Length: 168
Image (cartoon, rainbow, N blue to C red; front, side, top):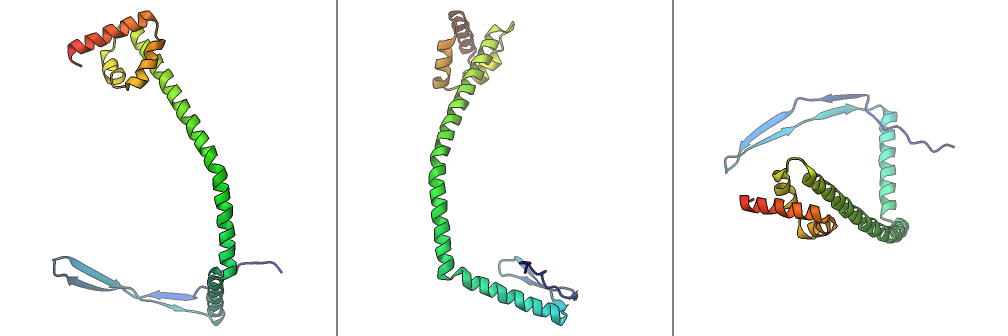
């Protein structure tokens, strides 16, 4: 015999009466609206029997769900999940570390590349230096500065000095 789920029992006719609405003004001036909707349904005897059986099955499932057997299964499942998570967490920590290193490397390379381009530009974009370079944290800028050529370092110092004179 195949294990098939029965279709949900449904009434053959359903009628909804117009809602009954009640309005009340509360002591603080708020208005409370209460609507009561009445639905009537008619069932064939076979469909109603199916509805009863569905409720009986739901009751059995509910009883099983708080049985010792079910609780034991849930505890076993919990143990398996805890074991799986204990395997997963170190991997996630490693992934986070590598992701952070990669982000820092990309940030470093990108800022360095853009800085060199800004220094080599025919017309210096003081706005870029004001909005990007000067706002970067010292621990981000220092390693980049050390990697610049002496000529690039000199040009950067001149740009920053000019910004300082402008009051930026």
